Length: 270
Length: 305
Image (cartoon, rainbow over all chains, first blue to last red):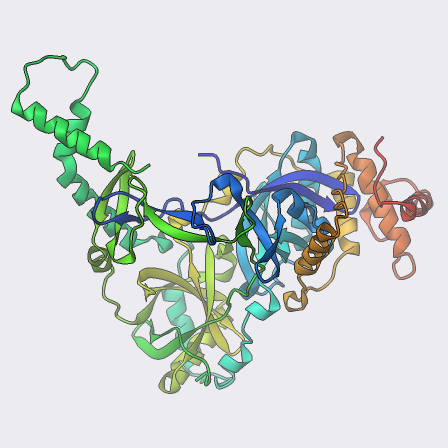
């Protein structure tokens, strides 16, 4: 499944500009997700907006973003308005600075994204920026408006593309000194070689197997068992084919199947 | 240790047969971002959110809500929250190091959230021996334990006097970069283009401290709101000119020249291989001055063609 690009804009280095698209590197779509159901009916519970004064439901197309100007006084802003915020960083990642590849503290890395050319016209320009960073062992530093904040971002060449990291703000990272101040500076010199020996014994290589999720596996098992319990119903549903004879001779089994079917349809959430 | 802070988790860190008492503290939080209120356009009133049955549209009170899993086409299986809880193994409160991996192999796209990892009073010696051993061997450690009701993998690495444990995203949550980029054309840039780009980079090298970065968004938005209230027309987004493939080399040359002219005082002009490849330095410098003059007028935009 091709990912939806969640941002499109431009990558710029000095006078070189190319159109780019960006997608998050992480996704929750494969995670076992539970929905909220109504115990009584088995239907899905959904959220609905109602007008706080009239109490009437509000249609999707009438929902708007409001900037609070005062008590109960809002300036409505459309997405189009928001795109017009007077910051070039809404649409353009202008690389202002380059720093050594390992010089950004990991604790500042917030969320990774994949950045790639959005139009063949920019393929070569994109490749120039990527390969020059690679050749120099540097990462680019820029800023970009993401989620209604202007964030510092770091661009790191990887494979044929670029990984764009949004960075945390200074006030989001807690000062380490107050956590680490009581820790001793120097380890017992006799212990360190032993630790290093142990490290050698337990040395391994990175593998995505190290980040498996056994609980998800057991949840999927649980769901599978529940599904099996449902099986008779499922067969009933599958049994309803176009070839089924429209006969007036009804046996009890068919009648039951039909009831189950009707029941399932009734439960179907909109 | 870490007096005055509340630990997110307390337990043991175990490597080989050694274990020491440790605590995890949140290293990064999310600061407030600007939020909007959702407004009913037709009345200008704020809206409230209620929870209703998807079919009957009746409100569903909290106590009537339960969890379910969608199997197919809108069919749900109700799963008791207790059954979900039972799938989580009991925590042994021990971060057990399963492997050490070279720091250079760490794939940072898996990073989730960082925590400061500190020793408790009794565990200090083993903790700092591990810290210094890892530092010397240039490795990070992979450990697992039940954290926040999930079996989580953390990457532990030395940081200053302490350790930082970063939770890692699960395998199915991360898209591999190889896959994300597989449809991109395989282009390798060499020769003059690469040299020019490297030259541009060299003039922009510096240091960056993320802690000093300022978010200008709120101020810019306040301006926009003000303009809207006053009925002024909002500024049109500037049109961005894309470098055409045919002009790329020229754009790079111009960029390199422009920058060099700007930085001429403190840098030696014959620094890059680009100069050696590319005619006389004087000619390039002249071009740089010309383009600088041109661009200082209006927008710093390169004329196409």
